[in-house]
Amino acid sequence: SYELTQPPSVSVSPGQTVSITCSGDKLGDRYAYWYQQKPGQSPVLVIFQDNKRPSGIPERFSGSNSGNTATLTISGTQAMDEADYYCQAWDTSTAYVFGTGTTVTVL
Amino acid sequence: EVQLVESGGGLVQPGGSLRLSCAASRFTFSSYWMHWVRQGPGKGLVWVSRISSNGSSTSYADSVKGRFTISRDNAENTLYLQMNSLRAEDTAVYYCVREDSTTSRGKYYYHGMDVWGQGTTVTVSS
Image (spheres, rainbow over the protein chains, first blue to last red):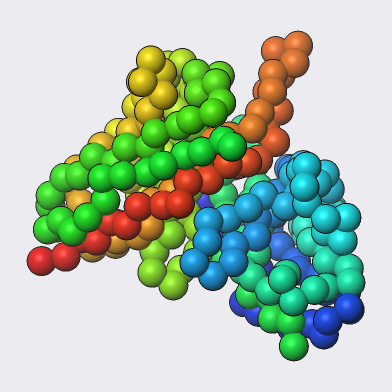
């Protein structure tokens, strides 16, 4: 079965840029999606189809996907961005696979 | 506001059954594919099952195949998950999720899971 691997945690200072990686075999051949989940809340879609932002998602969230790695970047990180982030890959064979999740701590 | 409200969770013994429901409101439920996604205590998100907009197509994660059944009632705007032969490892919060997707010239485009319910907790324990 297809697997997506993320670093367990990353930390960032307020106002700085943080990148979260998601690794999977030939992930760049598939679309990548990113979800944000704050403690006690349901997940929220923040990036779809590699680099598109749903309505209402701040511009500081961006995404890229190439080779075996997809990346979510948060620029000018704010305290409210502290959350767990999950990548997801989709194609007709992968179906709906989630990554292992990354906790972002804003120090 | 678009809303998904799950119900039906609870404590059940190993080997038991439970049926989850998800009431959809403020969107055209019959136009959307729907999913169940679960999250074990302190763990990550795991996709469980998906059903097409008219209910004709379903798919399941290998871990639940043959034990869980997804269904929907478009007249009642409700999604279901029938869970049989429950195991301790099925303990989780179960989310009802709307899929955003389009079809153009016969090609399917997945845009992500754009609406999530608040979740209902299933605990399998003796």
